Image: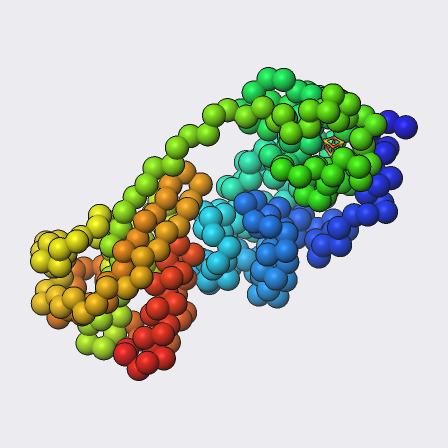
Length: 345
Ligand code: SF4
């Protein structure tokens, strides 16, 4: 049997049970594919169900306030996905008459849909024979083919991927490769003995499975230091909305770049930024958050002040609860929750 037949026979027996499986509605497939980028399927399940209750179709999402979309996304990370989802929904609803583009080429023009997502959606929703090449699929294919070149992007494998894929069931074929990559041909511990396509696999035949894929040397991540302050003013907590760019539209606490051993230097830095009458109360725990290309190292302080610069708002506990914050600030958000319970604001 051919590679794709073996793969699909296995898929018909062993496909993962996921809430978006069997869907043909491009809205639901699109939502699942965007949520699954950078996020495990187990985590996505709950968010997906919750999102669909609030926004059951593209019109409902298009009419929503961006703040409400970001709030539902809270905890999933990579918030540009949520902003792009909202922007794309508005295009589909208000410029395309409510219908999604009917092929990968058209889908690619929507914000937040790259070549992988366009191909995944078009193959699953419309049966278009285009490979959903992401890191998982590239890893599996590189092992199957014992692919020697360094893979800079998964689409380096486009031509062998096109040659291998099933033309009869392209959506199932792509999902079968996703399942194989997630459960059997995993990055560090591939289970070749349980693999339905091992008889087609060159790396397995060469007993060199872990040598593939060949990746470029990893880039070192830039590190950014931040002092985060839970700053009270008139028994409320100061927060502000981040401008466009990284984590744009989400809320943050008072933050100053760098680390201050010296309290006087931190007070001076806050005065220079327009905070008046600052009183540092006590240090809070350190935290670290790793983004794709950046690491935040954070040092916390509890403080209060008499005046804040423009852009900051003072919120009570109920207001704080309703605002979307990035996961990167989770530690300080939880401390703020504790202060709230202690009746501090
Ligand atoms: S035989 Fe092993 S390396 Fe080859 S595709 Fe299957 S799990 Fe991956």
